Length: 361
Ligand code: SF4
Image (cartoon, rainbow, N blue to C red; front, side):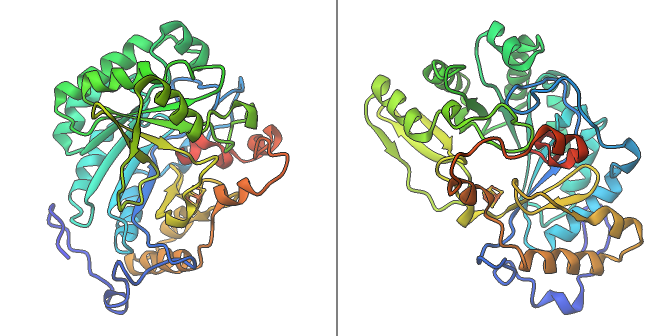
């Protein structure tokens, strides 16, 4: 295979005929399509549902993969069916020269879509260079339109920066802009229509996300979850009939249409998990591969890579691990009685890989 930058990657002969996208599935018959790549575990805000503590244990900087290492690993994933790359963090725009990584990824002809999920605090500075580098899509996390509430939620005073970042992304020409809003009962559940109208005004699709109990969500409790049905009921009271869109997609968002044509999504990971269609996994900035957001252990691909593994060996390793995958963490959580936070603070202190900001939420 010849990459756009002229590199030749030899497709392993023994894998060439067996690793077709239909052939490689996990134990539950799920193909591998999407890889969320965390490029840093650091974040510049402190959302209470993700990073509620005062202090954190960070990944040692020398253990972070450089861009060559990252693209080598991603190459191995793309030989195994991955075609969508989501760059996440922490906050991915804290990683210096992210546009360079995007440019490197764009040379891989197997990658169909490169998306960035960001809190947009730094987006105004980087939107144009990322667009020029070939980034396809941007999703912005924004839970409130109220500056004071933003400070209370994130413990940082950057609401205006986020709005400027969103505007810059529009100006830079990003289509299919998405706004992700985590909805927490009693915190921002009074902003559903406001967020929806904001999205409509800027041509972005808003997705309401149920509060999840993963990683550092140590304050999580079932009573704080504003569920899929709560969202539909509340928006139905304001807008009338809501029509579900029937789509053949493995996207985590269910999409709905209002009578006036506005489309929005709900990601109901907590009450209505979509594990049976889950085609995604996560790579941390230091090269650990997690097969599920709820997985407590990952596979150390950095070690294999730094020990000198060949491209063929990496491809084989990714294939063999995926074939054994049977994770369905969110589904299993729904079966638990007296459900509370998934991971304790003590466990998070001992292993920062358990944090959502480390593995890309
Ligand atoms: S809980 Fe795990 S298996 Fe289920 S959708 Fe999330 S990442 Fe996929």
